[in-house]
Length: 381
Image (cartoon, rainbow, N blue to C red):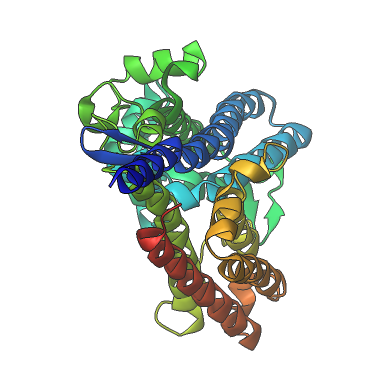
């Protein structure tokens, strides 16, 4: 009898090393450490880089608006592409503020409504308002998603994959570009502040507060980063730490499916030949590649230079099932390779058979990530 009681007590003590029970919900400390690494070293630096480049873009556009020099325009375009890359590397975690506050469609809808754009260019009253001190706010509130975000700015800056000649860009186009870039910056600040709260620069937080943009989970006290880190604890919307891990994987699954099924698939399969991302800069394939890098960063526990293998989802899955981890690694690498092998530019080669191989690789990655969540549901350390 005593031996049975002692054995039970030992078993309970062993389990308590790795897990805590909070408010009746299971919190696994190893899972929580993986989540913390993900928030602090994948999500946070990605959104911080995005916010900084978006801010820089506005300032450089204003400089070019005054100088009209080609060298200043070249700087603008370089900054635009850097901001764009960080946005695409964030798409594995659109499940947070980007989705809840409608930021994703607000700054990244395509194709651009060219007819509406031309009408806007013929509307001196609206252009005058956009040229005002609050042009960024007016743009965000009145132009609509099909005229906002990256692709509206891209349309001004690039043509047929090349930086435009500075002399081709009119003053009315620059009024539009500066206003839309201001709105883009505001929403990128909102993303950053929503995830990292007081760790964001004060100027970014002040702008979000000034514009009265939502930046907490359900209007409460938690940032999105805190909410995920506290998975399984009272107040978090995640019932357990494993549900937090599964949310990370679901975010990766969502973008793997979107790249294959929609971004490449819709034009390739003839569903919608106009559904081509970044057609003016002709950086579609770079967008797709960066989307898969967002999955890689999430899986390996950080952006390049900030990874900690011991605290990565990769290490956790490897402990669960080494063979499954190998499948994930291979699926990520294959998706990157197949996308990189697609003929450029995509806008001129969207029916090429190589694109079908990239679609298949993305679908396989989605399928393998589904296996990860199946394993997480049943795995106990």
